[in-house]
Amino acid sequence: MSEVSLSVEPRTEFGKGAARRTRRAGKIPAVLYGHGSDPRHYALPALEFARVVRENGSNAVISLDLDGKSELALTKTIVIHPLKNYIEHVDLLVVRRGEKVTVDVPVVVTGTAGPGTLVTTDLDTLQVEVEALHIPEQVEVSVEGVAAGTQILASQVTLPQGATLVTDAEALVVAVNEAPSESALEGDEAEAAEAPAEDAE
Image 1 (cartoon, rainbow, N blue to C red):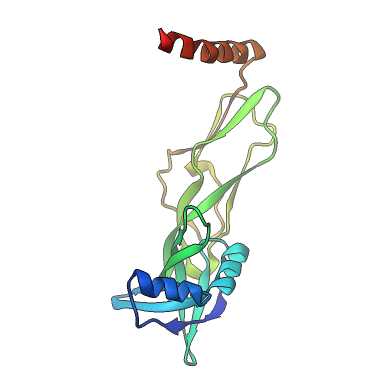
Image 2 (cartoon, rainbow, N blue to C red):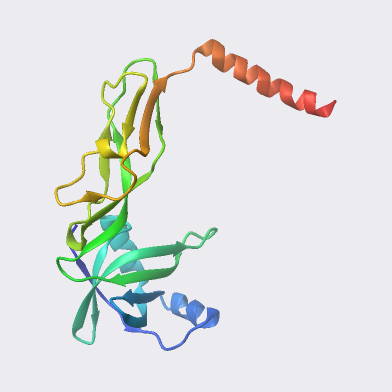
């Protein structure tokens, strides 16, 4: 993942009212912390930041440009409004070139498992330690042709070169089970239909 640049502005007003004004101006309130420095408050350009996350994922590394000076930062937390789906706030972490960071990387299941199987994903992300400028957007787990009864553990997932697994090596990531038969599904549906009648007695 390559770094991208964003021009930012310092924030001098705080609180809910100030945050609302920042968002109305088309910017996102953000806090930069790490490396022993005091937290610094910035306003990020909303549309540009949203594009960066869309194109680089939630672990995007950004070069923050302020008054001709730049500083690298890792996107650590993105708070999204639960109803209106806009970005309310961003936490950023100072990083240095060559420094390793611990991040959660999305798991993507690829391929088609063997006939008569049902694939379930137990972990949506894996935590890895990796160089800040080489964070993978995702890790892939192939289930192509895998038979029922197969379990894929975190230690069996292929990570990009230079990445180290932090998640428990024995954690279950993907399970390939035997798909339930039609009769079993019909039985479950019948039980579900009878349950309200039993509760009503």
